[in-house]
Structure formats: C-alpha cells, structure tokens
Length: 465
Image 1 (cartoon, rainbow, N blue to C red):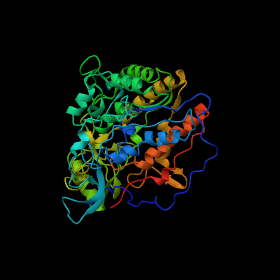
Image 2 (cartoon, rainbow, N blue to C red):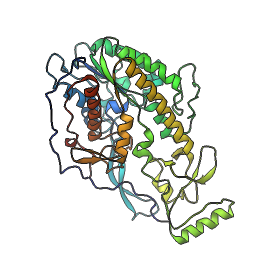
Image 3 (cartoon, one colour):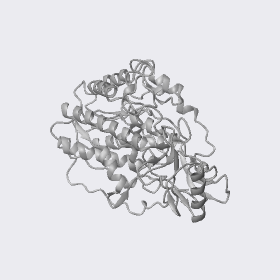
Image 4 (cartoon, rainbow, N blue to C red):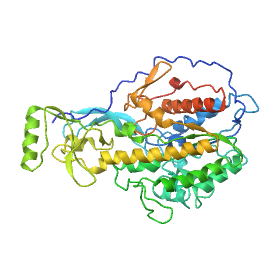
C-alpha cells in the first residue's frame, strides 16, 4: 500500500528575514496599571514546555519571560522589577522525559522507507539535578512563574495534587511547592503573599478539555462527569464539568488579585485546531484502483457498505460506540497514531484505527462546547474585575489559516508552521513570543499602556538536523 501520510512540509523558511519591530511610542504603563511585580499563573504553556518536555532553554523562552522583558522597559515607578524567578531546571535533555527532535525514522515493513519526523532525544539521560528541590534565590522565597504541566482548573482544590503528579511521573510542581501536601490554591496564595504582585496573567483551563482529547475522547465528554472521588477529584479522561471549573477559577482569581493586582486573563483555545489533531488527514488512505477494488470486495463480503476509490479515501475507524465505519469529513486522527500500524499492520484499511486515536464528530462538539463554556466564564470574570481579556482562542484560529508577523507567516502546520513544536501541542520559542505579543496587544488596548511588542522572528522555531 502506498505511503498514507507525510508529516509536514519539511522546509524551514524563517531564518532569512529578521526585520526590526517598529516602536511608535515610548513604553509606558498607562494610568491604571503597575507592572512592578509580575506573577504568571498557568499550566505547561506558562511553564514553557516545548517539543514534548521541559528544558531550561524552554523556560528561558517562556511567554512570561518575554512579558517581563517588555514590562521592564517601562520607566520607574511602574516598570517591572527583577528578579523574575522561575523554578529553573538545569539541563536541556528534557524533564522528566526526553524532548523530541527531528530525526530519520524507518518503516518496520520497508526499511528503505524513511521519513524525517519527531523522535525522542537520542541517548537520553535524565539529569539528576533537574529533579532537585528548587530554592528561590530571593530572600523572601518569591516565585514569579507558578505554571505547571498537566494541571487542570478542577485540580486547584485537591490536597496533595503535586505529590500525585510526582507519583504519576511529573515531579516539577513537587520541586518548588512550599508544601506539596496542600492544594495548588494554597500554593497560589503563598506565591501572592511572598511577591505581593501588582500584575498577574492567568492562563488556566486548557487541560480541563485537552487531556480528554489527547486520549481520543475515552472518558465522559458531555460535561456531566461525576467526580471519581467525591466531591472534587475528577478523572483526567473526562472533560471537566463547567460548574466544577467555574468555582475554583473564581477562587484562584480572587486570591491572585487579593492584594490589588491588575492583570490579564487568557482564555482557552479550541484545542482541536492544534497540529496534534490536524496532521494526519481523516481521508489519508491512498489507494490505487486495484487496491480500491480489493478493499471494496473485502468489506462487501463482510457485510459493510463502504465505498473505496482510487486516490484519497477516508480511513476505517472504530468510534467510541464500538461501531466500525469510515471516518467522515471533519473527524480527527490523532498524531499519536502509530505510523507503522497504519503502514504495516493495516490500521485504517483492513483494520479500524482504534477509537483512542480518533476524535469523532460528537467528541469534537463536546470539546468545543466545553471551551465555549469555560471562555464565557473567563470573560465574565475579566469584565467583573476590570481585567484584560486575552482571546487566545481567536488568535489560535488565525494561526490555523496563517498569521503574518513582520513579514514572516506562521501557521499551525506541523513542523513547517513555525509556531508549534514537535509534540503538536506546545509552542516553539517563536510561538511563545507571538503569544506574548497577543497578550501585550490586549493589555495596551485595555489599560491604555504602550508596551513594545516582542520581535518574535529573532527566536528559534523548529531546529533541523
């Protein structure tokens, strides 16, 4: 059978043109905002994960770092004051597991069939220093970036969440939480007490729906999931119910601004627009006339009324109801689908792609409904507290159709799009800089400040071997 899909157009077109960012006004805070002490609250996007893992280089290129740099350009007394403390690890190997890099992979059924695609960092060796407890260099123990991977809004009231994350293989929060036996909400309160922030950004909620989607919608996506341990602990297989999302969001925000901070609330992107869900086309089964005839006869003899033709055909899938059928337009095949299972084991042709690697039409709608509900509440909170509302959902939609910044066009195209990294979910250094610019644009619009944008083009995108 022919090659069924190709991962990305493997050409990087972002190195030749690096124009300067034009500045139209001196940086200023405006009349009602003070950037002196900045606290970033969030998940892996805030933490700085890229290429499927955390690296010290990724941390140094997180969007909060880019924001702090721009806030620092504002003159005293409203400009940001350092240090900006993140719980840095020490290596670039990847933490807690290997980062992804581009490398050649060979097909198990045809060793001559090679493809340049993401692979785990070769000869990965964990750096023991990365797992050591982090101690803030500031006298008061301040930490300015408390973003942690995997955290959901519904986790914010779970005692010992950091210990549970560590037991599940991700000990980052456990490295710096002042008391891992307490709740993330307690950690936030501790950070606020130590720093007394004058400005916050809060980007939470993506994992409340993303974890469901990454598993192919295996849990309850209806928004009516019940806690697996009442009253607060929800399965990571489920989409977090709106009611369970809203209460901890409100509580966390009230803590974050309790000492009078201004800030910006970042909404939840439609995660079905990410490269992870859009790289393998649902109609990626490429057949010759002879193959189409063979497939047609095979399925008719088995009692299925499927139609195959030369060229592109929709994959055969199993949906979450157990039905074996052809995918329909708009359904999504996950990037985690094993390539050799498609090429060598007949997944999608003589065998259905398992439902854990597929988002069906109804599962996609569950995701989008949850995102809309979360964002409605986040916007309500921003309005109620007179905070900037950053519509990153719309910005990611712009990326999906191509977004031009300073002469360079970025997109959600896997590998070649420049904004998203090799895991198909997190961002590149350039992607994080673009997010920083969208936050800056919204801050300027809301508060009347004149912060300079970041020159996103000077940072790294995907690195090619």
